[in-house]
Image (cartoon, rainbow, N blue to C red):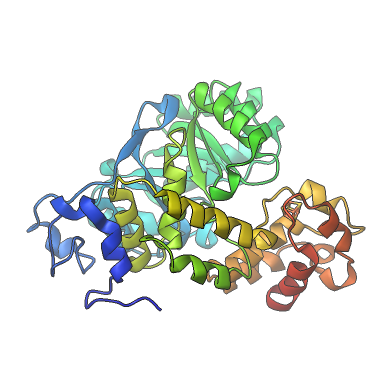
Length: 403
Ligand code: SF4
């Protein structure tokens, strides 16, 4: 267990601040304020700001650390106020997050903070046909109580055919009317590389948010797709940066004993080391995690060789638990209509994100045959998985904790 100082910061977090804290306002002897401090803001000298990068062809700069809307409160969330003070003024919401309440929570935040024009809001529609997409945009505007959304994504895109001419017309109309300023899509399934290539060839796609983390480095197919999208000016945002997995705790604790960074900080720094990536989105459900991430973003030092080595060893040690979402491979190997990729993701929410309620709710929404895990022999999936994931073992675990 890490030692905490009196301000709730671990020694490792303080070390993590490093030189970046030199210009920070020192509150209680440390480089970050100890309270969510709307109240303090007026008295403080300027705080260090999270670095920014240009988000592709949007031409706008965004902070390298984005605030994930799934971990915010349904009402005014002081964590967002704290993030904004350090320049992390970009929040990633969706029509469907928090049971449809993430945007309403932002509306409550803006009503109090009165800084809508200072915060970039991205939202998303999981309805992909043009008409339903447009309806979702208008519902988002109503929920946000805002005249516009900075970026609107098609959420969890699986099929490139949804990037149709009809959708292009709808997007263009919404932009001309000032309802959305930029458009893109998010994706996290096994065809991320295909979708990035599609984005590279689709001029009206300005940004893609996709699964990318320290486990992705050896993936030449994905790297070629990232190159193509980056060269075409598509603004790239990394999500699922923690590369989390079920059954990770032992390996994680071993990593925590190396270097100055926590595993949580190290994996973000590993993503930021890739200059093709504009930013990484992180679900920050506690002030401690928020401060950890801001400290990592403020420190310009890259991971040391030994820290990179430790991360590589961590990736190897946890490989059998880390699913990459390419379930067209493993689903086809079993004789049942299961959804291994979705189930693995819900198990990750349960085991790694500490969100058991959400994990069980999502699992309960799968069709009955996709939930009937006990009737399925998953050993063929173990044999075909290119990442060596223990599908059978993890499906047994999913059945015991999600069903
Ligand atoms: S279990 Fe393996 S094949 Fe299936 S989605 Fe995960 S990484 Fe891909």
